[in-house]
Image (cartoon, rainbow, N blue to C red; front, side):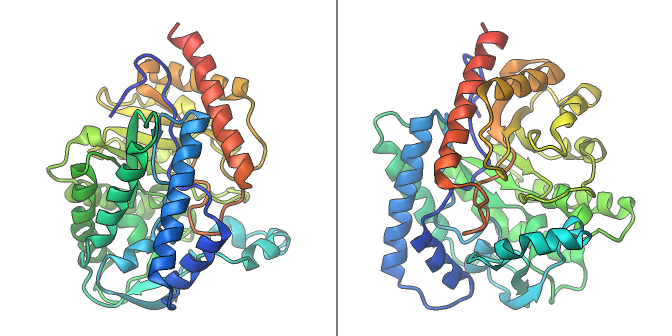
Length: 387
């Protein structure tokens, strides 16, 4: 995994806007309705080529395929793993349900066409990795498109759902305990993780459960119960990564990629030392949004392990405000000061821009302007921090 040796490298958290026609096909696929396979494949290819080109145009160093082939960052696994069927209601985030006026304000957004992350498939049988063909196609398409560019990424990454977010978002109706379910998912997803790394890609594990479930699955339970959940899932991640080089894996943690009060978010202070137990080479963390922008200070109190990098979220993917490059640079400078070494800091986003097809809250044209500002801010920070 590349460090910011000569300049502050830029990356993002994974998902990028999908065309409307592709969203509609992915919504039908997520509901297990018939979709023309050839039309879907063509739409994915075209959309992937578009987002790769746009990332390179705006100055992204460490890029990906924008998750164009996936219905969402987590429920895509229903098409690759056995054991999932039907649909179940997942708990809704506490900060959404707590404020009635907020729900009323957001009703039009709730009704738009998108892949649901609250009505999701559930585990009704043994979970195993059943079909590797999708991830094989995904990796092959990424490299084919990237290598056709005049100047490719410095490095490429691919996302994958963590055991914990699958177990949290896709309810258990089969295993006797949640622990058993988490470990079964970990053993299944190990196949995908190993394949992605084996294809020369940096693996990004998406683990919003390590923060978001405090105000979702564990909203009415003691903090100690949630922290046990964090420990369980970090152990499951390590189990699934067994044998893989730590410097080819980064871990993304967030408090939910949605614009809402976030009044009940667990502080980063409570979970950061536990995240350090993960056998990964980098953490991708939210440090831009109004609820967590101050938490860069945690790295001064809890130093980043010497073999770990920080992808600092300095762009908020839930607002159409375009951050000024000076703001981006200031955020990067603060993070670098707290970490103690600017070479170990990359510039990133708090989360993805379209984590579930159709869910994105930022207009596509604005997404690219925000990523252009990311590059501009990283260049300013480079001048000030690296000379």
